Image (cartoon, rainbow over all chains, first blue to last red):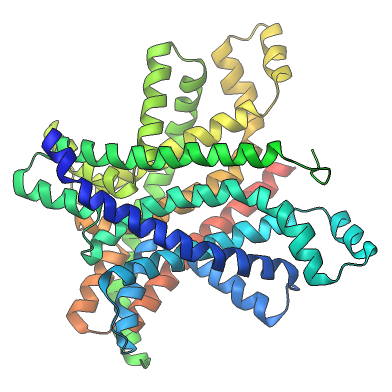
Length: 219
Length: 216
């Protein structure tokens, strides 16, 4: 069991790299577009485009999204290394979920906050950046960290495009020695440790954010 | 990248047949999930400690690993303990496990969000604890359970795509096979996406209708 534990470490590193890179790329996109979506009217063209993107991401399995990136991007003539195809698939998926998180967080800031800031004479972009986003960020912190643990789990599906991450590596060991119970338990152990470490960090961050809750925070 | 209607129609019959399999697997897993989650949740809350502990351990373990690992585990482990299922039922079992562990927590947190008064009132009236949970708390919690549960059930439908790795003939397995067989790529991927969107969409329409019924 010990040897399997050690043999899986390089692929665990790849899993960590994939999911962290994807999160770092997807979070600005998701929060940016989600905030934008919250300020748009429901019927505007841009809002409809964003909504259909979110619907598509949330309504189809990640496997199909990975197929789409894996098969369709090369058709455009771009030569993208496998690693980045994997990252792009995860970014495509995660950004969709994060748009929804950011939109909900911004919308949940009470209307009075917008009105108060406008009354003091802030213009719209100042208002958004200095009043609304800091309050919304507090509500986003938890769900976004949660999204990271979803990403880690989603990264296992990248094994179907032969990216040698944790699950693919475990599969390879199983097909070599058939010690499946052992290998799967070790694989599960690594995912578990990684995911729960992040969940714990997420709870700490959430605690930090809500502990510093200012006057604006409604309880 | 150009779309052609003929290729679109050419791959439609096999994909539709696969969609039926996806729907069958999803419906069975959803039904089993809904049946086993409430008793497990109640066992998790008021069961004797060995039961409570084992439900807790199972929930935390499964939630901490990707569904693919659960599928692989069920695929390898069931034959090892003498249960030889075909791919279809292996898939249903794995998806039920995945769905149920998330549903257990949904049911539990909804019941706990009801407030102590309900439980105390039931006990004051002389209900045994488990009957209070099953007959008084659970029905009230149903309204709060439904929206997050729908979300989770949609995840189960989406996770059914992962069964392609154990060669169950559902949409993504058949679609992937067709891509390599016919080299029709764009049309197949679009069609797979449409099929999943439709299935997940039907679920959310059903749940909205049910929610309205419960609201009255």
